[in-house]
Each structure stands twice: as structure tokens, then as C-alpha cells.
Length: 299
Image 1: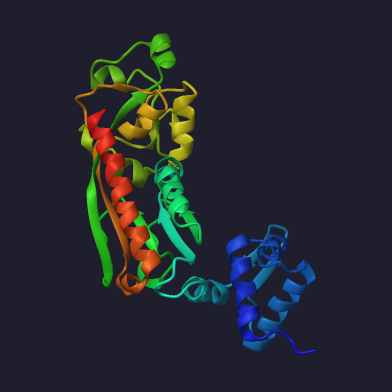
Image 2 (image 1 turned 90 degrees about the vertical axis):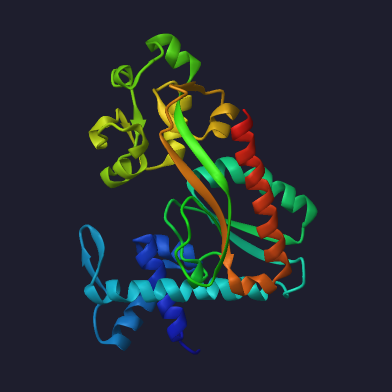
């Protein structure tokens, strides 16, 4: 029986680096743990160097494994893109489309937009990556992106669909308990929901013209969905997009204060313009997200 080829071995290495353990990587690849362990051992033999150090804390990647990780990421992205490209011809309305968006946009904005698209094009499978990291479309980590920052990569087709002004919100129940702040000075006496990472908090809350640090917040999470969840649970005052806040019954605090403004772009790689299903999705997202932004301005 022939043994695994290099591609199989490197796929297993990538899975371990992503998952962190042999058991999790085996589930990711659909292999047994012993088989995946043999893949790593075989690859170490072929490379002539260890890839992991075994310790009571688990597998610790060596310098070689860490050096290989970005290359493996590129290989995995390219392989995934090839599968998507092969899933349907350029003019067909079958196949898959991989979309990347932030947590908040992916969970709160896109579902009804994608449902409308699915009703019109049932032969197209949609894959959604929710991450606040900016995925690299030039490496085809995704086909189409909804971004809150202007694209900086070359060879991209981008359409700015508008801007979203974020403000402070809380539930009516929280405000009944603790009162409604009428100034930034009074806001300091309230329970504030914000970011855990200091760099992000400073970057994202510059519009309020007061010093902001990690210690400003009484609930800290870098997950936008976690912040929204505790806001809805009457925990305190947080920052939200107006359309999302209105859908969840949140009340605007200090309506004249614009915490910050986000531009919104729909982006795809220019090579995908030849694909009918990609163009249709791109145009559909432009229309749908434009409508979402308009809803926020008109409310």
C-alpha cells in the first residue's frame, strides 16, 4: 500500500498547527489520531528535523514548524480556492462562494441578505468566514469581503457602499436602574462595555475625545458579539451600529456623540469578475449592505 504523499503530510502539519493538538487536528482532517501522528513522524523524518516538542503542556511547535506555518496557510487557501473554482464553471449558477466579514456583520447584517440570494440562486453554496482580522483576498483566503477599512491590496475590485456612524447604546432596563447620562462626564460613572486589547480600544474609540484605555471598560472582550450580548443583558453601555441597536431594542445614549465612523466596502479579486456567480453575489451584497446602511440613517 503506498504511503502518504507530501501534500497529505503537509495538510496534517497545517491541521496540527491550526488546531493545537493531534486529536483536534485528526477530527479536522477526518483521520484517526494514530494516522495523523504517523503523518507528523514521517514528515519529520523526511525533513530531518523535529516539528514539535512533546511536553506536559502538549505539542510545542519548533522554529521549523513556525517557519512553515505561513507557507502552509497559503497552500491551504490556494487549495480551497481551487475547489471553489472547480465547483462551477464561469457562467454557471452552481458552485460555492466564500465570503469573509467581521463578527458583527457576519452574524447581524448578512443573514437576511444571504437568505435573499439563496432564494434566487439555490444552486450556489455560501461559505461564511467571520473574523475581525482582514483576510487576504489576493491569496484567495476568501472570494468576496465586506470590510470596514479601505482595501490596500492590489488587483482587487472594491465598491464603497457608505458609512456607518456608531454611538453609545444601552437597554431601557439598565437606564431605568442607573439613570441616563447626559454628558461624557456622567458617562464615566456608568458601567462601560469595551475591548480587551489595549491597541484596539485606543484605535476604535478615538471619536469621543477623552483618554481611552483597557482600564476604561467594566466589561472587556475583543468579540463584538460578546459585547452586544452583554449589552442586551442589561450589563451596561456599549458601542453599536444604529440599525443593529434598533433591531434589538437598544436605546441611544448621548445622541449627539459620534463615537467613530466606519466606511464599508465590498471587495473581491479582479480575476473573479469573469465568474457569473461571483459578480451576482458582489452586486447583491452591494445592494443589500447599502440598504442596511440606509436603514440606519433613516431610523
